[in-house]
Image (tube, rainbow, N blue to C red):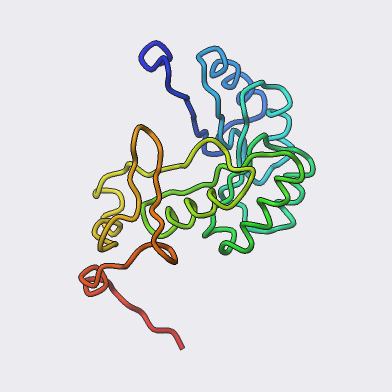
Length: 195
């Protein structure tokens, strides 16, 4: 992999699948092959296991995309269970709560590379968040899945409010979120009322 992409940063997501010993074994292999980011090596809710892996490896161990309770974030950050925190704006409960996580991480000297799984509003929220915090990590998780995975995300906006140029996301300066939801997309949408 490294020889095929000599200048690319290599990031990998284990999706909470390894025991501590296996995660360390895999992590050492990843280090040997030039990877720089090892996401959720152990079950994400078992912070002590993830910390054991982070303590044993030089590669950045990351996590947090599925965590929504601020008490869990506090414990994860205070114990330094990860080297990089990855809150998801939507899962955490919006920008205000995500900013609280970012401030906790900043106080601990940890960078923030948010989880951002599709090209909906979560991508815009994440881009704006990264522009607003001093401890933004080096990466933006950017969905490249085609319409077979998330067909609903296509045609969502009247104009795309960002471009990707040379591997960098460039967000415009339009007011608000900088986007208008396409009327035809709304017309095709299904609605449900709750009382």
